[in-house]
Image 1 (cartoon, helix red, strand yellow):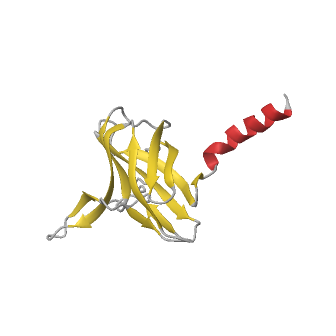
Image 2 (tube, rainbow, N blue to C red):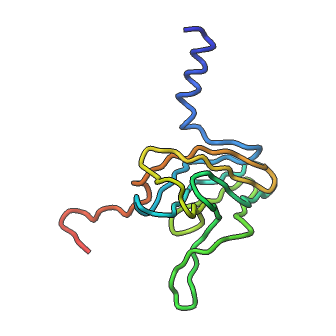
Image 3 (cartoon, helix red, strand yellow):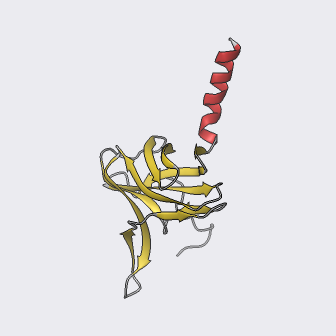
Length: 157
């Protein structure tokens, strides 16, 4: 194996564990899931890290896995019932800080899935930042992440 081929093979092996980068923005620990195999919607979660000296903002996302992709959060209505709503202004990522997209909070929402999100697949998502511009991220589908833990043996709810 030539040194060039060896380096390329090594880079391909390490690619899934390295964070995605665009200017001063890094994407850490991304994963996507659907609520069920028959769902028409799904979501992606990750940590957005801003290594720059200025605040940036995730303003939109697109993917061919869904008819529409929106930035969403959960908020309580007047009766205290939680519901998902679109966040049209996007998510701020503070300078030298991070912003977590996680279940039950801010997230990327896939509406009108064009194919099922199956365990082990990946989803290509283009994230658009106000300052850093576009970043294409390959997000693994992990239907087990973020699931409620099973109660300890001998306990039930």
